[in-house]
Image 1 (cartoon, rainbow, N blue to C red):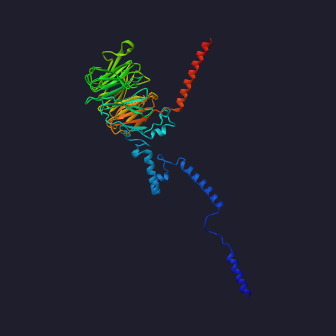
Image 2: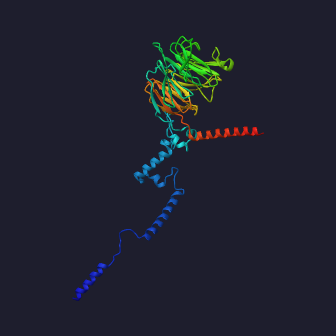
Image 3: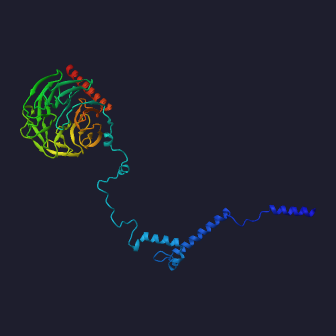
Length: 454
């Protein structure tokens, strides 16, 4: 029994006895001591092998004598490093181009460059960004409007009446009330209205007819005042200079060519005429009050390669004229008529049928035919496109500006009139202008009162 009990205790002691662990990770204190000793040893070895023990090629004597002692991976790394530093056969350099980089293709522009070179939007771009509606405010039917590049069939009066010629009839649309009434109807077979132009101030309307006559109408009284004769061909263009009316036709009455464009400059100093012979003439005004044109042109420009019908004088620079060419030309050109020089040329890539300047913004509107039948609003003088208005399914023959300068009407060969709100007045700017006008008026009244009291 005692022997059995003793054996039991002996077995129990053997079970709980902790033998020394000879395998597994070393304790942290032993690892730390070992790392320090290895570092010291490696430093000593490095110093001993560096001082005067390397040859001229940077190898230790042992490596130089027997490169086979290096492992394959070490030999490959050494080869790559030598090529990078010395090049093949010792002639190369790090990041050295053997040949010049190829030039980019013609017209290539890095679209990402702006992102990384401009930290903020330039002020000129900010100022040119404004909302322009891409849809017309309204669309009106214009049945039987004549699809003829050389005619001028739409004009907008200072009294907010839009005159539109539809073949043999002439209609007036009141843009304020929406009322439409017919002013005249030609009775002779085959005759049609070929041009219309309002007197700048007043209710008188000049109407050119295909038979070579010009009719003068009082729109307020709805009656014809007189008929002017002298042309032997249709009167395709009309322009007022104060109370003097100038007309142009195929008969060459204004000058020796077929006239399809005719515009007086603001103030009546110059008369611009464009012809089907691709010639643009500038005529000086002479005589009493500078209302009659001289017999010889001041300048003759032949840069256009097609008929010059679209003409428009800049309202804030009266000596600057914009002219547009037909399908073979497609360019808008700007002229300094004081100097007789070409200022700029812009290829619109479409037939230029009509031009007009904004009176509220420094912008130009162009109406186009082949190939896109669009309306473009340009920032002047940079000629940056502000908007491209589409919707007409045929060429935009005529443009007219409302008297308040906010609205453009376009007449297309698709027999529609489209009204566009292109130049809405900035409320802040309008308020500032009104305040300035009110202040000026108050100052004037105050001065008058002061003078009267004295």
